[in-house]
Image 1 (cartoon, one colour):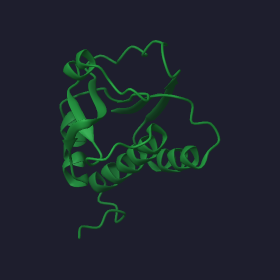
Image 2 (image 1 turned 45 degrees about the vertical axis):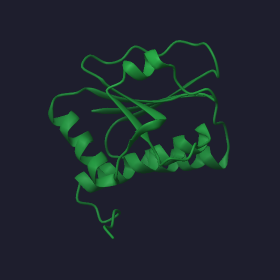
Image 3 (image 1 turned 30 degrees about the vertical axis):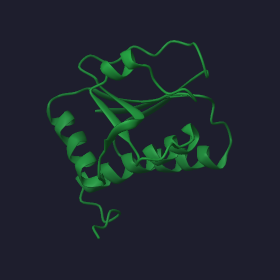
Image 4 (image 1 turned 90 degrees about the vertical axis):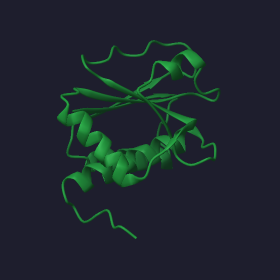
Length: 140
């Protein structure tokens, strides 16, 4: 299953960009990062049977183990792509939220979209590591 991050804004050569690159290189599953302008631009068409996850402050707070199990379930159901959408400064509208399979929040705080992208990349690495029984994730 392709793990596809679709994000508004250019991350460029920044500390956040380096973190995203570092974590995505470690993920054994296929990954893709698509950057869109802050406004406008078209979303790339989803793969057939894709699942859409919006990062949204009003979303569900999911622990790393649960997140890994959801990825595993989607993969095992034959989903070809998990699309993680990160909005710009204004986030997403109600229609976009309603069309998503999952609204996902990294806590109750609002995070800058560049930092949210790095946090998502780390969670993708952690989740795929959990599923591969890699020792990276440690339960407390």
